[in-house]
Image (cartoon, rainbow, N blue to C red; front, side):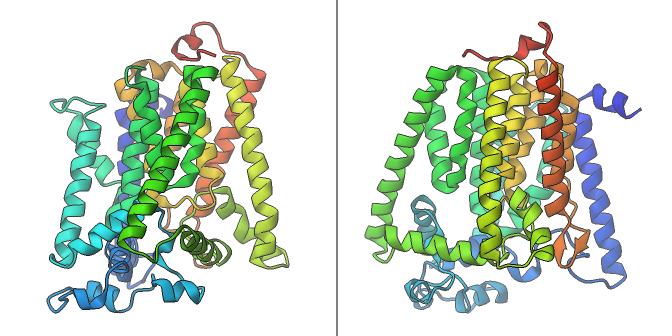
Amino acid sequence: MINKILNKSILNYFYILFFLTLLNAMFNSLASAYGIGYPFNTFLCIPQDLHADLIKFALSFGNISDYDYSTWNELYKNFLLHNPHGKIEALHSNNLAHFVAPPLSAAAYLLLAKILTFINPSVLVFLFYLITFSLFFLLLGYFIKFKSKDFFRVYTVIMLSYPILVVLTRGHLYSLTMGILSILFIFKIFNNEKYIYVLPLLLAIMINIRPNSIFLMLLFLVFGFKKSIKLSMISILLAGIIFVSFLNIVNYLYSDYTFLNFLKGVKIYFDIYVLGLAGHGYNNSLLGLFTIPVMSFCKGSAYQIFSFLNPVILITGILLSITSCWLYYKKRIESYTFLFLIISIYVLCSTIFTTYYMVVLFVFLLIPMKKSEYKKTRHFKIITLTSTLLLAPKNYIFFQGFSLEIFINPLLMLSVMLYILYYSLTNKLTQKKTSVTKSTF
């Protein structure tokens, strides 16, 4: 019965996602009705952090004297008057500071801080919602015709999905940008080679938002080894140009923002959110999977545990990447499977990969809607079903203050990835099934 449902249409995966989201919402509603508080009464952020990643972080780049906050919502007023993201004084005191933002992002938030001097934060939030809904509307147009009866069904499910709701309620500008760019980047790789030299620019921008995006250069291998080296070098060069250019622009506008202060800001962030576990609440990486259990059963500081786990995860990621690339080179896996393996390693081997960045997984549901031949991929059903389950909310189950999402998601992704690798190493593709592989090594 399940096999029949999964075979019928890619739309069924969206329906499964929608059903799981509604099931979670029902659980949260019941918890609220019975007077059970956070985190059981919502799968989203706490009210005190509503739109914090947009308003709070932007306001940290401004000066209190520049704002007329008398008509502001109390929440946003509190963001301004009691902002945890400090300036240079906080940095010198080894406290959380906004210098953690890379130059490109810092430039965007400097602009937002200026905009907030003449508009109410609520207006900026409205514009953020409007832009988010509009961008995903246009993005979906790449995969489904606007006039199609399926368009609004899929659009509704995406906008009501767990990662997008977290993006909206947190006001997370980074993940919105990364979600749009990464899906476009992957789609253009696996669609055609017509605009191949747009890809390095897209990747360069992504690297300047989240540096671990550099790992996605492995996807260039679908164009062949020599071309992938060329595209990778162009991406790194462009990323460097963007970084240096915006570093100088931001430094000109805000003299305290220097390269050394940026590095120190990253270190402080690392100490608080990685070693201090503040960023592990909704982490989907292997570090999130293993850090808390290891800390529970082993003696030692977070620094000692991380010093052990991180090299192990890094080496594991390198070995998995080499194996995946070799399988693709030997035509033992199709391009759709290769994409899943690379994205899985990208998620699992990142230090922190929180819920709102999981938007990238929608690519496994969207590409087959545009390119139906990918449905012939040997592992198509398990990949799309796994992606659907990873996108579904599951933070209604908590253990010692941490969502079981941080155990379920990476464990599920790792298990499916290892299964595919083992199966592909022990079984060759038939000639028929290699027809959707674009390898040109």
